[in-house]
Length: 85
Image (cartoon, rainbow, N blue to C red; front, side, top):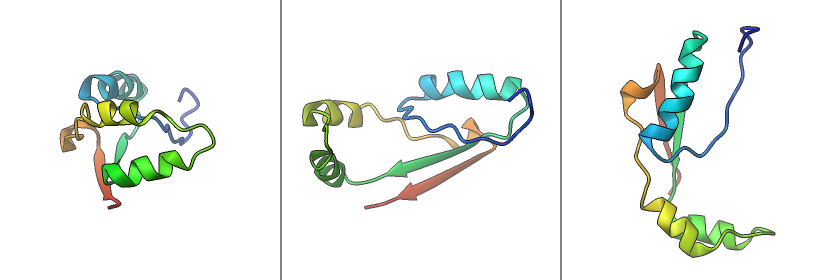
């Protein structure tokens, strides 16, 4: 960020408060902030997860899915919504 170079930050930030920490840090460097929100049906997520070498327990994914706070367009300079299912 100090060098002013473009970069992508890939993280699962389910809540506004988690995203705000990063957004505030990036904004402090004068970064252009684009949030890309990906959404899929829970059953599709669970199916993909089950096929992983080291799957996350389904109950953990279900619990986290219940905590998702969809980004608001005011959270960044641009917010893109990608619905997969």
